Length: 422
Length: 111
Image (cartoon, rainbow over all chains, first blue to last red; front, side, top):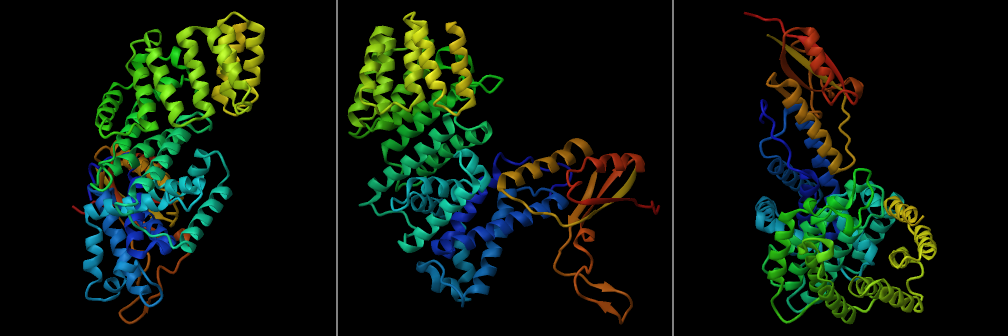
């Protein structure tokens, strides 16, 4: 224990160690005993809080937590070996007094910890679970979020999250979902599901829809951390789309702080102070983007990353290479036809060919009726009518957009736009 | 400089999330680092499960700390300070206060 100079704690140490500990404990106990793993974790954290706040923070807090979790795991295994079955592939080893400690020690090795986390990622993102359960389970078990934090990150109630988690665990038991990394044959499709969860996590965090900016930012960081985990093991690190997704997240994160002013209001791309963009993250993003440019497949992540890169690398808003971005969006629309991408395409058309062209494209989209409850559609119409000098129309559309979003930050931006038209 | 013993009474170590724990430990670290500034001598948590009270060579009460949990001693720490006033001022900044009671006692110099 260091008494004179307690070491400062690494950011989010407990959250990240919680994720690692639950993964290892689940590896030992089996996924059917996920609750037991969570109990041991809780118990370990509880003990750390007690011991550290009275005796000082240990020199190696992460190591301390692991040692205590391991000791508790061994105790549980000895105590419950006649009552439960543990992980099928090592149940007999754990239950024989001769091999318990050896087997547990082995699973606590650094490389095995990564392996356990990878198993956890594939289990949480198993296609048999509904998408919203995958996200909640990932935040809980891999990212160490509390129920409250998950609820405020996903804009729902704690009881809702509890229900989702409960059902997810039931489903895992019913379907006898394996705690494993899929075989080479299946990994491709399963990896898609994992990347989608990471992508959704990031989007939830990035788009200002909640009222708790700190938690939302954490969620973005967690998404990046999970993607990084995939790059650390040979079985997954060869897939280019992982790097494309990482690049995409780096480019967006680089603008994280520049997007929000002192009053927590959103600042639109055009008005952002580009000096506030995080150069380091942009450089990192470019590296990932280069790394992703292998193989023959351009995924949606590749295209979205390329678009984000164009924005990040443009010296100013007016110097943005709109024709190039337009090309990327056209390709993206072909790959993943969606009305939101069509909307973006219409917006870019406006940057490239002027507000009239955008207004025509947007009204064309209106016929599809798919965007009629999407605030950004009306905000874009408002924006281009304002640019074309038709202020009454602009105000009408901005008001319609405002009625469709719950985000305080977004509503304030729209309010300012309405004022500017008057 | 004198030494002061801070006795920590209570056992409220409940924690709702890893992040809350991070915050509590960060506060504690700041107390030792920024408030005490090198005046922390030692400290330790006490085991909860096992305690013996000896009354004489033959008479022993064995069942735990046998007190109400809010009176239970969770641990102690020793700090240095000029006088009682200062020791209390320092202890008041201890983030455990609120969840725990702190008893501050001056150690008699034995030299």
